[in-house]
Image (cartoon, rainbow, N blue to C red; front, side, top):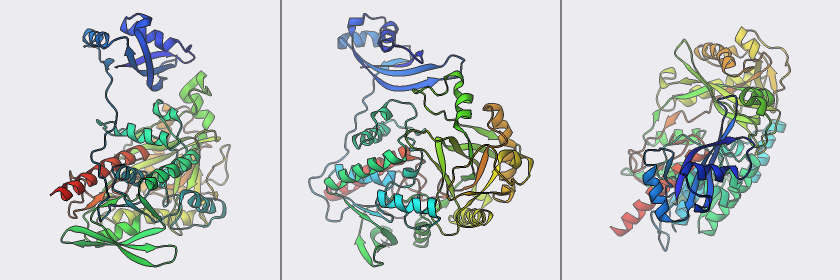
Length: 543
């Protein structure tokens, strides 16, 4: 097959326009085009006339014709052989090893690590400290509607991980020469996600659809012999001479503990497993502090963003709610950027610890809520919070506790109008934008909610963003604090074999270990780590 890229057509083109353009581009007769499929569809809004941009895979009348055309267009970067994107298991066993591999955490990384190990016949054991996704959803709504937090079942902990309560974005900028991202997407579709995610340029699922997808993937893993144990928190690790030998597991349902023999452990922690990070550090597992970002959530009317980004095409059903991506390099040397933009979504309470306020963003598949929201965050480095690998957690906790105080308690978040924030004046009432955060927002002055360098950089960035997106710095737009968990504040460093630098058999993976940033990249990392585990087990068995 041949892959064609940069095929551009008007927004409301007729159905036969794409095959006609393919025929014209290749200079062939219509009868010589056997079939075509859309690999990706995006849009180009940089000019006044918005265009749809397609990548298409094409099958022609004969292999000879395909080869002739590929030679003819050898210098054209937009006409190339279609790559083989099929996935092939790296190992397969008829029976699981006596000591089965263990996956700690059942977010996107843990799900795909467990799924791949199950598909290869290793029958993994999964330990997840939170609850099944539907029970977890009830607990999460308990915080949002009643201000009641369950520290073990919330936006951060439970089946599906933090990505379950997000926009469900399924794109990433990672290098992916093996097309593992395609494997992730295909498995999602197999589990019930819309087939559209395979072809749109910025696919997303949304929370409600993710719940069903996660449940179906769990069923696949168990059908293949995997075992998933919920409300099981790893409280200790047994390491002998630099080798993983077992785990101490606390059953959160009855408070009992037990030992689990384990020679191969995939550590698919989320970025908020702070107690587990501390335990691993105490046991000597190598880790290091790393940069991350802190800031606020910003909310605008979604219609304002649609009009600014799409102009006359705002509201077109094929385009959906518009998004944005912004960055500003401030005079004080700090970078300010938009993070995890959620079109037509809501700002959500995302804390996992008592007496602390954390914000995040979430959208449903429809993206039809009244507001757009995104994190506006400032990059920080370990130099801003010296003190070792766990110092970033201390830094986060200080900001989150202060946000709880600023909000007046009850997990109410502190907020401020953008106009007041830029002017350095406290807000006393809302304007035209109603914040979506629950349990609620208390209007105040956010100047003390972040370090001074971050406040200075953000006050400079917001008017600059207004020059890029008309209305972005509107006076009544709402800032809600604080956004602190943009990524893990530490890295559990691993080598080229995917194992911890100083503990054999321990495989740090996903967002918590700082090897992913989002659902897709976490899923890809889970696949690669599962492959490494499988190859090590089979190598050891064959030795």
